[in-house]
Amino acid sequence: MDFTKKERLNKYLASCGICSRRDADRLIAEGRVTVNGKIADMGMQVSGCERILVNGKPIHGKNEKVVLAYYKPIGVTCTERDKFADKKVTEMVKFPVRVTYAGRLDKDSEGLLLLSNDGDLIHAMMQGSAGHEKEYVVKMNKEITDEFLRTMAEGVYLRELKIKTKPCEIEKVGKYTFRIVLTQGVNRQIRRMVLELGAKVTALKRIRVVNVELANLKQGHYRQITGKELQVLYNSCGLRYHEEDGN
Image (cartoon, rainbow, N blue to C red; front, side, top):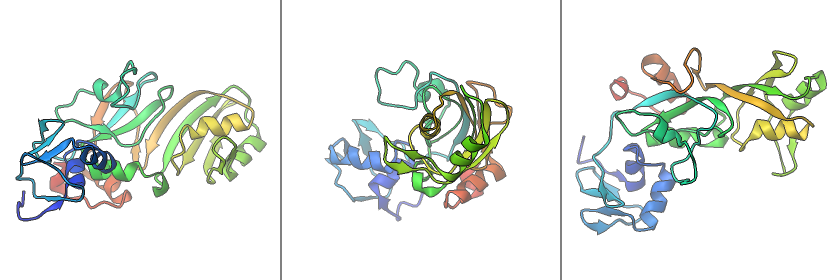
């Protein structure tokens, strides 16, 4: 590490895989971060050679960038703080490096979830306005009609949130099943859209995030993303990727 080069503390904590930049700001504001024995200030710069503690625990510096593709089963919750969650995703994935989720997936949904220790990537993936593609296979309790497909594709007004969803790609793949590609991050978006059109989602599986596919990954298992696949993911998120970062 080049100790002559400094960066904002929130970015440094995120790059260590501790949390997102937003959460780092909150930790700093709450006085839970110390640098060389003194409570950290918002906006302060660090080089990485300092003794930095979060909640009294030392930070060991930036880790090698790790990105995992994980097949999240139904019942596993994307949370680190909810003490009432039976199964937390960060507890289900046993990996030598601490990772957290880069984008959420509902507890009652299954499929592809990306996990990483790279705060910059997590921050980029959590930005709902970034337009990253996410692809799903969805089953509902009513037969799919041409009108349903057309309305979904054009965008659905969600009365509860008072917004209209962006146009999307959708295709019927079975009597009750469709494939859909979204580019926005509205909470429980597909379930809300289907409900507005008088039906209910009975099964939802995410099969792709940007260029990363679920493919033949088994439920509850993960694989590490490397090489060209990792480079494309970083580039698609507007981040610079160096081969030595991933290997």
